[in-house]
Length: 338
Image 1 (cartoon, rainbow, N blue to C red):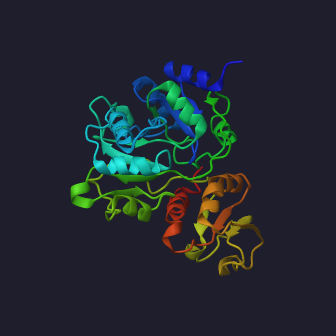
Image 2: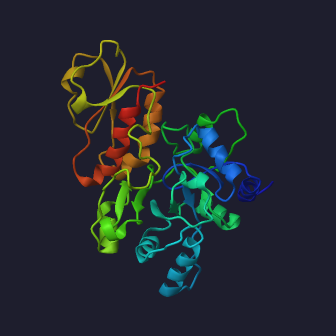
Image 3: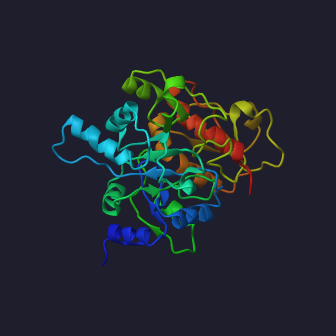
């Protein structure tokens, strides 16, 4: 029986797609140096061609390397993808990779426009999953890999989620078990350091405070038309087909909403508009790490539960919940669309 890593490498080198596990979500991967293969990602996901992809790269460390040798290894690897590798990139790579962090850098001339959405920047990440790290080492190249779901819908955190999204096809899915982080990576733009410092373009489980501490710089979240487009930045994303609302924004409950899910933290009272209704209660874990791990699986379960409305308790206001709040705001905005 062929080793699944060898089989995946063969498919990728042949220009086919492979679904891969990461610590964040499952990705739909193609050889980032093969334009035809990359275009297959956009067709499979029904993803706009202007929406850039993140390139997943291997980890370059070898046993016994000194600190300076590690920096040199990152420079050699990142320079294949970026024409300018600032010291800040080496610091963040050394501290957080492999891990749920994507760096936006000026792209090298050889990077395909299909990967970057025709921009002059490229997103790079070294994922923290043993199966995919082995795959990247064997493949000896970069893999363009957005989340393995239809564009705008709920991200997959198990191999079964991927199979549900792409049922009936011949997509190879590397099963690496449930994703241990559960939401997409933090994205940090390092292309405007002199003017803005590091810019957080998408929050994730690596926090702004951790980025600032690592770099000894103040990070911003300045987002404008002048900045690069990145994955997961649209106002509607990660969305169930079932209508969804936050309790704080639910002034009334539509009469047509007969079957309602009230999704809340332990001990919370049902919001006023739901008090005269029959509802199914779902209790959330009360830590951000635990909720992130289970978030997309829960949304998928609720979306398949035949509900007319999913009502979510408002999240705590402190910064530990920023990444989950970001995903849920976009999910609410995109919900209810068949």
